[in-house]
Image 1 (cartoon, rainbow, N blue to C red):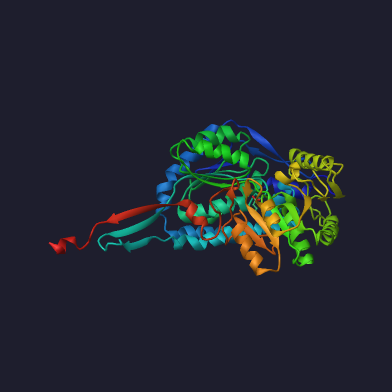
Image 2: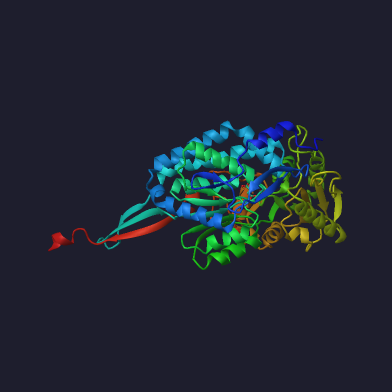
Length: 497
Ligand code: SIN
């Protein structure tokens, strides 16, 4: 296994932007401070990035505020074409984006390439939505007045994005905002700022005017974004991350009654019914669990398997989980990289140990790997007792707890028995059951015989404590539009004398 950053990687890293991007210019932090970005596979320093201060945050918001008026007057087609050019550029530079992501976040290159395609697609999708922003004209029911419904951009936005999908979670917010005519300040995760900065350089090349996108990586998230959330120039906050942080941000947004979009935590149940095609359920289950190394809010967090097929499913699932090769994501053999940092790895380890102490059976894995990097073995737990913490909390790692159920009613009750409602997965051949699940599961998304539902053309988002709003799909642009109703009094009144 490569345990050092290679010369070739150093040369690549040396060319990546590492400054703040404010009002169309790259600049150092106003304090001159920088922070280190680490490779989670080697624990070595990849780069030093400018560490934004509250003053930099203020400058970024001021730039976004100043640019708002002219940006919203830019023709929708032109906004769409900038997005289209950004899509072409990201796609042409897919290898660079993939390498940046793998180095700073850890996932295997093949997965990073998948994220490049996924992330770029938001740019293309919303390039096509920009010229289609509509409104409405109608006659009031009494036939007297005319009702005009106008859509306008919300205004300057603040985006706080996570480390697990450093490209796609940024494009999923930036693209609809650009399409709608909003300006923005982006604070990418401090663990993975390099991908966001590379994306910023692509927007610069694509011709995005100064001030529309301002990017401020920082290690002082609260101190930098807190004042922006309280500032009347800001009109919207969109956050992807934990429910705990989301709840605080919603509370902070209340002062200004900000529009908020929150894509928060999940606790996805993966249901395998007695009529499921078991090989497909195993393949889908592995995908739902192991995509992004389990570091996804949509990752299957609890496997609920009908008792009549539990043995067959578990045996095949364990074998598929055993076949993963943990290695640095740049290694051709790697099918799972490290977890993003020591805290994430330690939390996963603690959840597994506690479950075993509570009586769960360790069918596979259960250990952190020795040596450099935050690697954790693909792990399967069976007979996990109800009430175990691992069934209640987002695992965010390659660990699959399996439990059983006897009836569909019990499966639905278990699936719904959490404060979260982001996504559910279900394997069944029954159309009737599918329809019942679609109506009874408390979830924002439901995958039927599918281990991945994420799709730029579909509305991504959750119910209950999994969030507010939708990203992607036809719904995605609405998050960036205000509705203004214009009531026009009887246009024929003057003829009536
Ligand atoms: C997330 O985990 O935050 C998003 C995953 C996805 O878009 O599929």
